[in-house]
Picture 1 (cartoon, one colour):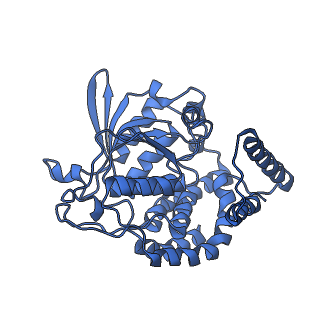
Picture 2 (tube, helix red, strand yellow):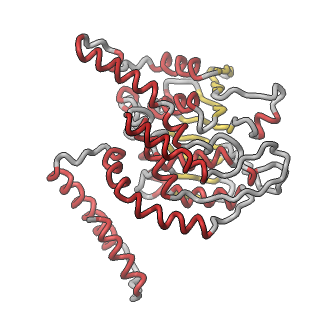
Picture 3 (cartoon, helix red, strand yellow):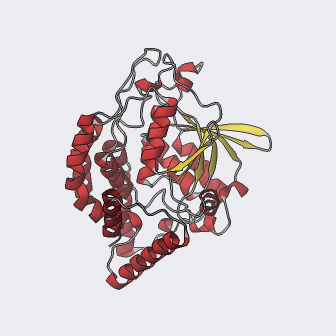
Length: 372
């Protein structure tokens, strides 16, 4: 944990340097330079996920065996949320673990449209509005929301069981460490997902989606985080469909994509666009719902230098995020061979056009190298 905290402290100023400029007053026109996700974004978001690796990744086993959580809870109509908020993060983690759908996630950072237009002048996120038997009720603050969700499910948490002796002491130490690590994602992603950026100012002639976008996501995924940050920064309302590990909703997603359950996955009913890949999604959001300025050549050059330097770090943390320590070399190689076989079988089963060019050969060589 000590090394993770040191990495967080070192990476935070760098990450802040790549953050889009917020606006002090949303009514003041301001065009800001935006960068698409780069190696530094991927690294810091990945470390943020590792810091919270026990939370917001998988559906609670008691929930997964009973199907989606919507059968047991009132409908979650609205969640006023700010991506880079500790309190909001705790709520989103539980939403993933309980496999919930949120009809509307509404950005509630200090300069978002919803907050500025509110009669009270402020909304202290997180705030959740739920509907049960035709009546709406409002829950304010993470403590109230988590109590409501936990009471609704009554799922037994094995970490609450007292084992006694050394195991009890170890559990207490882990709990204290967890209390510290909950702040790490906010430090690593400082400056992102906390304010509406200048390119989404209401004074600019930027389109607003008439219908909410739909995002398949889960809290612990580093690439989902990058997309949610931009949704907050562009002040875009969206429907959240949880698709953590073990979620039956992954089958729903696979039926939409034709087989893949990869998150994040965005559906825009306003344009008919459906897409995966966080970088493509973010570029689409900027171009469609913001005053978009393409990345500068300087940022491209910096990314070209940083990427090779960080490659060993990515290689080291990838097994942790995938839930594999590679301790069983035979099992790892077997899984890798099976994955490669599936890819080549899929390629062989589909009609393709062969282009004889240096570029295609280079791409093929790169693909084969990455699969090894």
